Image (tube, rainbow, N blue to C red; front, side, top):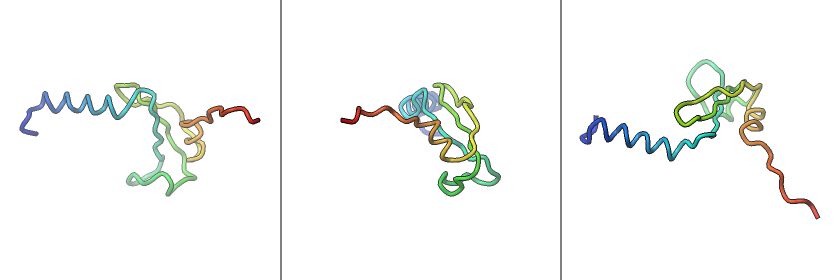
Length: 83
């Protein structure tokens, strides 16, 4: 526990989460045994995709691999019309 007390720590944690995780932010977790590893090390393994609701992580989908997770989390945005 810090010298500030639990109330300040709890309020600081909420403020930090509010700035760091905006509602709608998504993350993919590799479904494998063992410790967490960087996503690029096992691109062929399935992923669970979660969305931050503002109070917790909500499961959105389970996908087959890293590419499918990236496509779900970052859909293609329409660009300018070609000339």
